[in-house]
Length: 398
Ligand code: LMR
Image 1: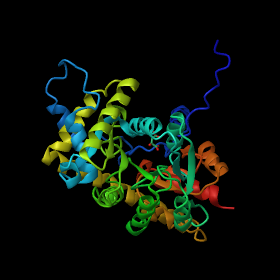
Image 2: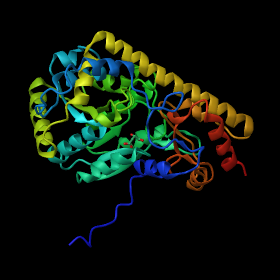
Image 3: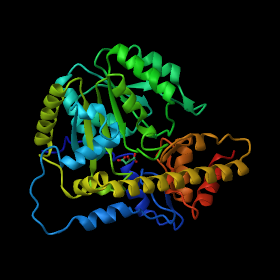
Image 4: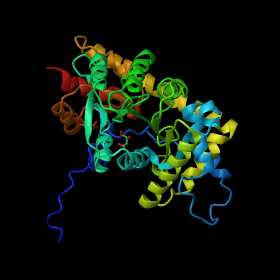
């Protein structure tokens, strides 16, 4: 019966975790998956999360189903964070938001919605992008194409090529964008470049789908959402998927959100209804624990402030690691240019190593990064950064 079923080759990112765990090298370093580890290599439990969990009064209380859209406080938390607290678009009731199973869940529900209501639309993702973007949209029978984004030779953004490509797309085509901390390259557009991209999107009547999984890790909570808020100011309709996996360090709780900004409150209500229907037929409703934590941290002013400080602490540690890595590499390989390491934002650095060099790092040094050369800088710490830099020197030198 199942002989015709294909083998699954495994996920290029998640598959690395199993390989890493099985590696017996005592010096191994995991720079594959996008997870933040603290200065001693542990995954942190944020203090604001600890307090929220203590406040979840009785852990053995009844567990009713949540609404299909999740907890109202979780939804409100997503909205305030993305669009700015109590901004006009929210007061006008023009944003339909549901709580989702992480960022992936938001992308899936959004892609299902697009497939159902915009069946002619194709989706265009940056070249390169997070591999699951392509998998999720193709998995909803949406044709996926790539717009030019990153130039490996110069470690810069192919902005003119990106614009001329987007200028040729058809009405209602979806353009998937990373508002901050581009995954995998770490190279973000400037605000002027965002303005230009959004102008073209408006002119061509395209659908922007902004996927923001690292808010707070780039510059700050507000400026990381610049593209989203600018699109709203320009009167665009858009999709926004957001994740709390990284900025609340709640990876396994699967907490995120999907927001759709609509021209009117009436349209937002229809869209909200359809999103509920999508959720019902995929998984009925989200689980409650993570949603309760999000609700508490996002809506308690003091905890929210504490949270922002904790995210900035993670952001700053990553920036310090970028500087340290760059300086060790530069002193060992003065002929190479490593400026890209500190120009990039967020958790990732696109190192430009060849697949063979990435493979050597893994087999000879137990240093794991994704085969496209993406390194999770958040896995570096004072104890392993020299080891990693020296391993990179070994594979880079001729
Ligand atoms: C990553 O890019 O490593 C993370 O977003 C984890 C994942 O699901 O791939």
